Image (cartoon, rainbow, N blue to C red; front, side, top):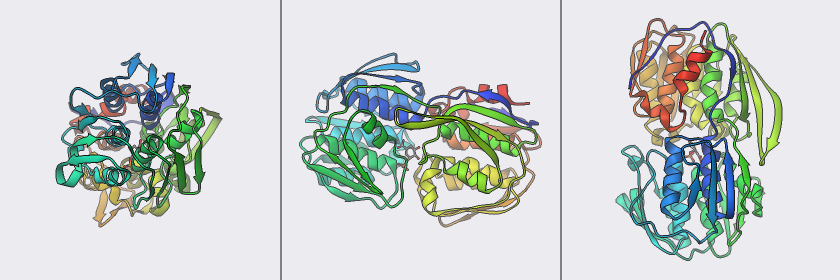
Length: 428
Ligand code: S3P
C-alpha cells in the first residue's frame, strides 16, 4: 500500500491513541503465567501483539476477546503450558520471539518458533546464549542466533548474567526464564532499558529486587492474576508530538499516554531543543505512570543524542531525525548501533529517506548527523517494511513541498492501526 501525504498547516485537537505495545505483550505473557483470569484493558490489537496472543493460544492458553481492546487471559501457572502441535510464528515481532523463547526454555516440552523475513534476520543469540547457560537446549541457524529456533525446555538453574546490550527484550526473556528456574537469577544491563516487565511483575505480586541496574528474581515466584489497564503508547504518540512541533500552527492534546521514565527520553531531548511540551492529569495505574501530553509548535534548536539516554528513546529515533531536519544547527545521533538490527537497518533507512527529501543528513559509524533547518520536498520514499520508518516519513511529508508517497506503508499495522485516519482527523 502507498501512503500519500501532503503539507499541512498544523495538527490540532485531542487525540486518543492505541495502547502501549510493550505493556500489551507483557500483560498477555505474564497473565498467561499467572493462575487465574487476568484482564487487559486498552490492549493493542495489532500485528505484533496478535503474534503474541497466537503463540500463547497454541501453548494452551485460553484468551477471550482476541481482536478487541479488552482481553481475558486464563493463566495456567508457571509450568501449565502445553506442547504446541506446530511451529509458533512470532510474525514481525522481536518482543514476541525473545520473550516467548524465555518462556519456552523453562517448559518441559519441545517447541519451535520462527518469524517473518525481517525477524529471521535479527539476532537471537542475545537471548539464546544466556538461556542455554541456564540449562535450555536450543538449536537454530547460525549457532542458534537466527530463527527458526528449536527448543527443548526443562529444568533451568538461575544464573548471574551481565548483558553487554541495554535491551528490555533480553532482560525480560531472562526474568521470565528466571521465574521458571531453580534459585535466583540476577541480570545487569549497561544502561536502564524500559522496565515494564519489572513493573508488571510487581503489580502481579512477584517479589522482584531492583537495585540500580541489578535485577533479581527467585525461581518459582508465581504472578497473581490481575486487571491490567494499559495506557496509550508513547512511541505512537511520538509521531504526533513531532508533527505538532514542526508544523507551523499546532496545539495538540494526546490523552492518557504512558510516561514511564524509561520511555520518555524523546520528551527530555525535545524540551532541551526548546519544545513546548507539558504533562497534565498525571496519575499512576498498575505501577505505570500516565498523563495527557500537550504540545505546541515552535522554534527548535539542535541537540546531541547519545549515551545512556538511547534506550529511553530507541524507537523514537526515526521521527526525532525528522524533527532535527527542522531544528536550527547540527543534531548528532551517536551510539545507536542497535538501530542496525531493528525491523530494518534504521540508520540506513532514515539517512536514505531524508536525503531523498532534500535533508542534510550524513551517516557515521554508529549513527548519523542532521544539519537543519532544511526545506523538504515531497517525493517517493520506501518504508523498508518497517512501521516506524513509514510513519516517520509520513511526518516528514507534513512539512514537505508537494506530495510524499511512502511505499509499503501497510507495515504500520504492526504497531499503529488507523495511523492515517488519526492524522487526517488532526491535520489542519
Ligand atoms: C521492546 C524493547 C526494545 C524496543 C522494542 C520493544 C520491548 O527492543 O526497541 O520496540 O517491548 O521490550 P530491544 O530490547 O531490542 O532494545
